[in-house]
Structures are given as structure tokens and as C-alpha cells.
Length: 59
Image 1 (spheres, one colour):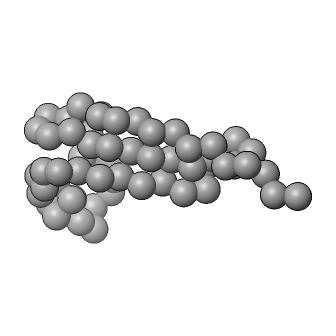
Image 2: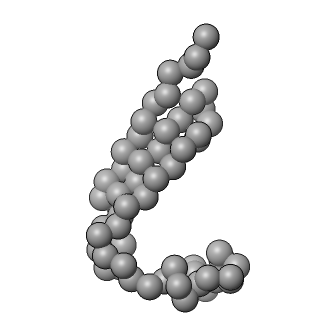
Image 3: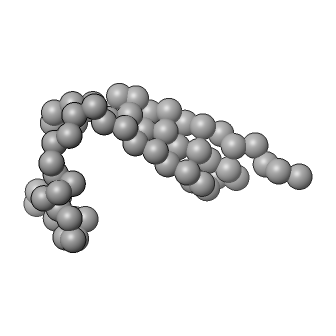
């Protein structure tokens, strides 16, 4: 028997510039799918390509 999927919408997530929408599908307490959508491209994704994810935290 298939377990129901709970969908969690987190919107908007405030950022330095522009908002981010997040949708997460959860089954049995485990994230099975996650989606993000942003209306404003800020370029951090390009700057941080091939770098450690922790590099973007600005420590």
C-alpha cells in the first residue's frame, strides 16, 4: 500500500534580493522531491560553481 505524500510549500523565503519559493514532498518523514523557483537570477549559482557549498556562507 502506497503511503501518502505530504507537500510543504514555503513561500516566500526572503533573500538579500528577490524571494525564493520552495516546495518539498515528504513521504514517511523523508524528503522525496524538492523544488525551488526564483524570479530574480542573482548569479551566486555561477560564482559558486565547482566550489564547496560552505563557501557561500560568507564566514
